[in-house]
Length: 283
Ligand code: MEV
Image (cartoon, protein in one colour):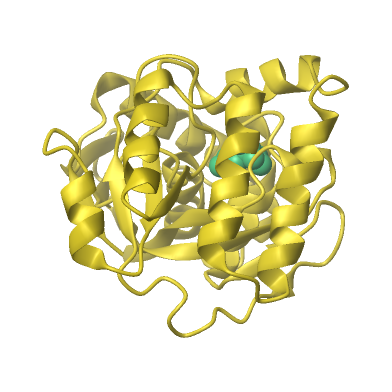
C-alpha cells in the first residue's frame, strides 16, 4: 500500500508574533510545499526515511522521526517500509517548513482525516505557536486568523502580490519556539509594536495599500528585535528604491532573517535594489 500527501508552506502577510497574543494576522499558502509518500512494506524490519529535494540534514531527519513516533502512538499504528519526503520548501526560513512536514507526514501515515492528531503533534513539536501556520497550511487557503476564533477566508485581491519577490536572507540562528518565548518574556514592553502589527492586518483586510502596510509592519518587527541588521540594510535599500518589504515568519536575532517579502510598482527597480548575494524567488 502507498499513500501520498502534500502540504504547502505559508506566507504571513501581516501578524507575526502579534497573533500569539490574540491580535489578527493574514496568511496565504505558498505554491511550494512538501510531498510525503509512505510505501508500506510489512516484510521490512523498520521504516526507512528518504529525503529528496531541499535537504535538511540530521536535524530534520530527527524532527521527522519525532513526528513518526507521535503518529505511531495512535492505536494499531506501526509503520514499516519507506517514508519519502520530497521537499521544495526552504527550511527554517519562515515559510512554515516545520508545520508543513507535520501536516504532510501525519496525513501520509494516518490518512487525510487526521486534523486533531496533526494539531496535537504541532503543539508538541512547535511549543508556543499561535496556530496561524497550522491553520493556513491545513486549510491551504488564504486566511484572516485570530487565535481562539474560527478563521475567516481572506479574499486575496487578484493583483495584490503581482511582481512580489521572496528574498532568501538565510536561516536564523534561533528556532521559532525560542524567539516566541523571547518575545513572550517582553510582551508588556512590546505591547505597542504588537498592536501596530495587529492594526496592519485590519488595514490589509480593509483593502489599504500593501506597500504602506509592509513599511509600518517592518518597523514594528524591528522594534520586537527579530530583524537582523543585515536584513534591515537590505530592506532599507529596497525602500530607498521606492519599494517595501518585510520578513515573513519568525525572523531572527542573529544569522539570517529567513525569507523577506518585497513589493514594488516597478519590478526592474526592485531587482536592481537587491544585492546579487541574496537568492531571489518569484512568487
Ligand atoms: C511563525 O511563522 C509566526 C509567529 O507569529 C509564531 C506563531 O504565530 O506561531 C512568529
